[in-house]
Amino acid sequence: MPIAVLYRFEVWERGERRLVTQDEVPASTLAMLAPQLTSVPQRPLLAQGPGWLIFANYRAARQAAQVLEETAASVELREVMPGDDESDIPWIAADGTRYALVPGGLAQRVK
Image (spheres, rainbow, N blue to C red):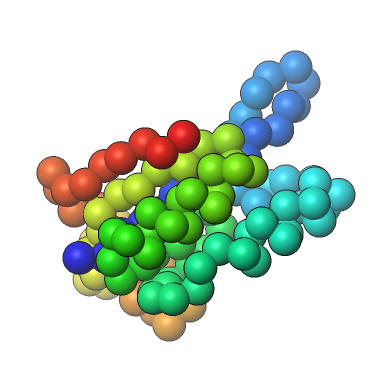
């Protein structure tokens, strides 16, 4: 079963802490994070997007989570499954594959 690694970075805005994806991180901060993001294992990566990576198995997802926990403020592992075009799907891969959470599936907070 595919496993999603969900990660967020912490930013301060108007005195409040917010968790955001790399799309919302200032460019200067993103430049510092880039080496860690590119060091995440790429196999067997099925899909990725801002703040999420989907791997074919738990072992690969766990390794990616360990790399990300050094820089991200929040890292979670969630079991996902391919969805259909008619569902409200939170993750859509570049190839059009849609992924949804598995009801009652693995939900593990790493950080």
